[in-house]
Length: 397
Ligand SMILES: *Cc1c(COP(=O)(O)O)cnc(C)c1O
Image 1 (tube, protein in one colour):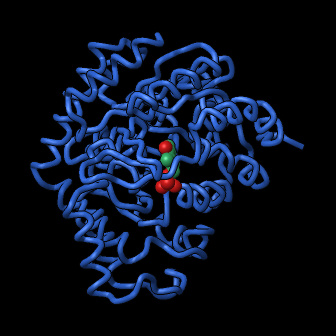
Image 2 (tube, rainbow, N blue to C red):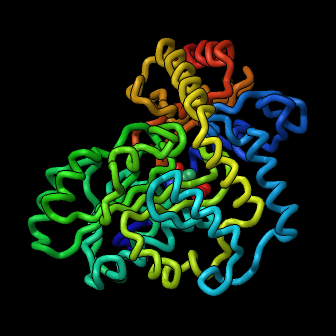
């Protein structure tokens, strides 16, 4: 038992900190948006959300909301409740055509990014995407939960290894040992706690050994690269036939749903038929598809460049005032180290009273022994607000 994960132990280790976070009023906060991008609770506490994944502020973009409304008005249904393997709305194809144009790669829309990985990783384990030969699957130790938790399902099909974070020498040793057997490396493109995958070095291994790469790039899509194609996609001129990217369209992209990008369009058929929830669950619904199409148009316009620059400006202000490990790394995520969970929770609670919600992070969100505040910048913040937020954070450093 527990070869690949141990949820019971994880719950036991995390429970104390979550209980403390809850009793400090930091969980299950329910709100509405105010006229602007502030939030307000039922008891009238107004605050700025400093842990929104809508890094460009697109969640409030009128054109995206209108896109959702227009799609509903036109189709007059929320869903076509049949497996897409058999029947789907033409709108689904139209949306995927838009995404193919934006990302210059084969594109599949999914219900969410978590659903994409739930379908993709066991399929990869089966060998269906590597000429029917079961691959060795190497997961980066820091790969997102949405991939890590599938190790046990994959491990019933094939061999699974977990490698130290970004350890290229370790991966190359395994590639040599694999001796021609297909190998998949599974990782985040940009990590949700900051930092990147060493993409250029991995591409060298890809050329040398035929390494397959599977990246979740949810934390760089939209805010990184030309037209917001993300960190991994923008590192390739043409997406390599052995590279797969998944991402959430419900974060910086400002819509909802998930995305699979393929360098090899021939993989598509197996994914659509055998990709578990990608076939048996609903795909993104009609308003989601309308929102995605509207967001693609924004990504193709100059407005995206303006929003990316605004975000960079906000992050510069933050980095000047609060030094952190990931300062100036071109991504809007920072972790302010505060050593222990109790102190992180106390800081988060006080900062919330001062009008900013920033999440206290502790094990298992971050490695055991670490704790702090996770800060996420947004293009639609005012410079005065980020400055006031930094003053509040500085009181706890
Ligand atoms: C949030 C997140 C997900 C989940 O995305 P959904 O579309 O909400 O399922 C997956 N991977 C990473 C890295 C994330 O940060």
